[in-house]
Length: 230
Image (cartoon, rainbow, N blue to C red; front, side, top):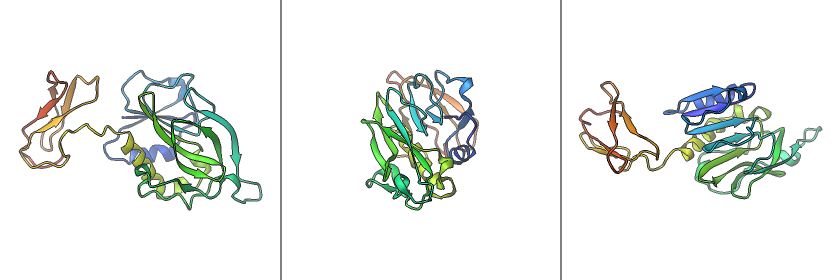
């Protein structure tokens, strides 16, 4: 479950996130506040609360500094149309979070000067980082330092691929203890994240049902005699 908060709405982000399989995206406005729980990832687009929520975050075009990073000035493309600080967009290495993502053809108007010592600079322009990501304070945080509407990224196939790669990075990697693809009839051990009190299973041919957790905090799903997606 992803919560997208944008002051004036962002159709490009809504469509990119909403197209991802297994993702439920809820849109909101800053005046509605941030719920204490219920979401695995919060996307803050062009707005930041006084205190950042203690969960995984994707921060886009941050307007000001926070306890996690500092925001300097705005770096703009020169009026004559030359690339300037926003030119020569490139990845900094073979990072799995950028697998199949090519941003070299993206044209950018402006971006924020953002510094976060805990983060890896995944994409940079001549004037500084455009995408930073890392772990800090027990949560995963990525920062896109520009408004996606100030670029041609939203018109490029790289945009949905980038969103999919980042969401995959945020997703818990140890949710299923056994290989994801199993033989028909195999039992599957599930280890939910801390704080879960039950597991909800939707079989391919029936109604959802709930499994209680065992004393170790997990559960074993049996009754998988029907092939398909559970």
